[in-house]
Image (cartoon, rainbow, N blue to C red; front, side, top):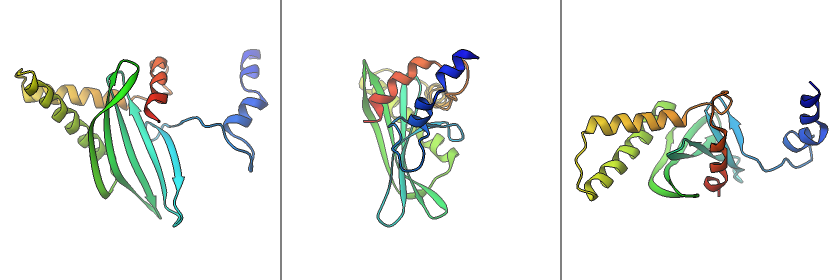
Length: 167
């Protein structure tokens, strides 16, 4: 209990949950309901709110560009990144015209983007792979991106990936 008391002290709380009028430390926020980190939140002059949602596993990162207008949430874009050593590379990007955001649609679009990327790589290498096998791999990658950061078996080394993505 003494270690917990030392870990949660006034300085820590003031950094992550400061009192009104004081700035919060610029750390990504984990939203367990959406199973993603919230980054780069902003508000437009007209009062619309925008943020970037980041999900990732050890193979890919999925970045959602989300807008909130009055009482509905829409999807502006979806980016798919692959890892190249210590940095990320954009491999797929899809723009939407303020499409109403549904979680199932985001999952399906991300899976399709991964399948399209894998098909292109296989075609360039002149390798034939069954379509259902590619779809299975894409599904597994997207599901891995939806793992909760709060689970005890979450691979904490994946948090090192976040700064490379949130630039």
